Image (tube, rainbow, N blue to C red):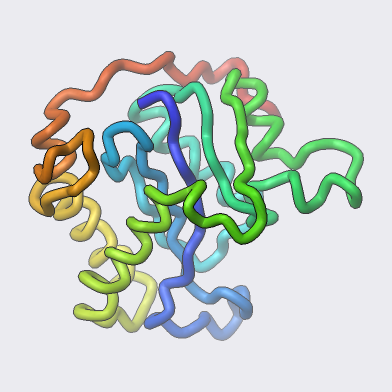
Length: 188
């Protein structure tokens, strides 16, 4: 529970909202723990911006506490690496994590294996959940994703060495306590 991974992924079976964000339509922000492979959170929304992603990240922080680090890819909503030349200060997500003492690591370009736990979760969710259940709207996408998180954590055997072919929450029935999120340290 010391390093989490975070990534956004299209929920491709759900069409874009008529007045919503066109390029991505509906997406999920997925956050697994690297050490235990427990899927900590997977939020489905149609409006993932940098600000919304930061707000969504607060929920697992409140539930589990603050990890030492977070690994992200080069998605502009989560990463500063792509934007450093264009802006003088880190985006709110980075400042938020810095205020909490969370170290950020950005994967090298074209190296999804550096964020392998979350990428594997995306693939499994697509193959075993969305491709089977085929959600057609935002609410259905949320329901099937919630079911997938529960199934992934409590029923689906995981081949990670730490899980020994058991579901992550069977291998880790209790998770270690992390440093709690301090409300007074949140930036405005």
